[in-house]
Image 1 (cartoon, helix red, strand yellow):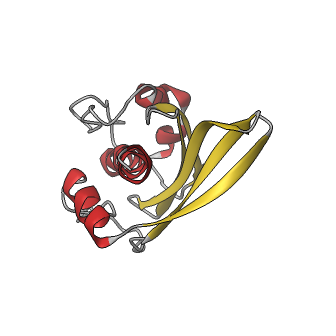
Image 2: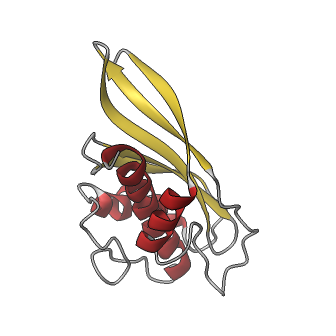
Length: 155
């Protein structure tokens, strides 16, 4: 990669409705058992594009969702077709959910795209004793894919 560029994308009302519909009506993960402070739904997202020889070669988005004990911040890397290339947990305050940051958990998201359910107990194995952390991870990945799909691929 030669460089990384940032592109901010504002979400128009029609796009927001489609995105929410694809995310079961929410822009932020909610669990009634969460002790996390609220995470605000955003109306603008920043996408980071890796550039090589003047062409985009991949995208990434930083996404924060409420976990069990506090917000969990992820970076999700996508190929230009909207499939997950890589991801990492950037920060979290989970007590029992720490295994969500391990490669053994995160690797199951690699290759997922918009046609995959990306849900715990469907195509994602949750971490035992860390249900909310696992669900928040799946939501963050699905949201990144849906945002990229709606804001880039469908335009």
